[in-house]
Image (cartoon, rainbow, N blue to C red; front, side):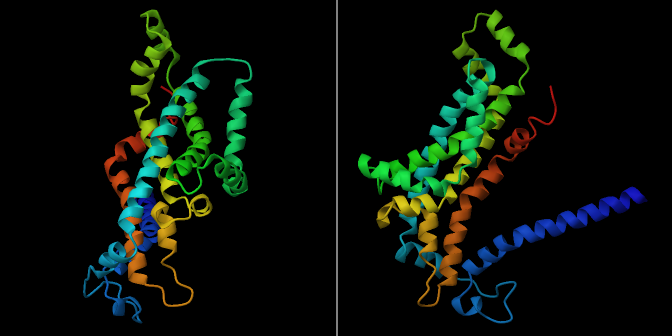
Length: 276
């Protein structure tokens, strides 16, 4: 009886937490399809009675969200690909080899991760100005990769450390080179870790705001967070429906990733929970 009561209480609490976190998403989705008059109605319409797609039409026709969406997708995808390629190799090297200064480099990686990105804006600006990378998507990819490498390499070190050493010894006995061991043994076993790291890096680049605000100026180089922030008006009424529609579009990659990679996400986050 006591156990059933505890389960009921836990289920209720989990339900309340889920409602708390999902309600803003629900409200954004419903606001994006409400007519303008229904958005500001008091008391609010918890369930929309009428639907319209005019907010989405306005987003694409007047705010060039389509181009901005592609910019963000390109930058986030390139950042993820480069970061995962570099850190999958780097994490393997830190995990498998013992060399002078190894621990110092690992701790340095952790310390670098703790530095707020805003402190680096002025050095980035000055360097990119001299290199001709200001107001370019390539410059943003370089900055985002630099910011993502510390966390990604630290994650990969943990994933590789969980692999039994006997696997690598067997590969060596069979005559496999170190690169062959990495490609044929380590990489297939760390796929859940690759997925988790890719998602974290992708969403970090997708949602980043402050660096892109300083390093890009022209409208055709804008990323989605900047475009959405520009919809907020201080001198006149903010188009709430259009803002909600743009926010809904910004959520699509996160929703798609969570629905298509659930298995790998669970395996990746629980990889270090049990020693095998």
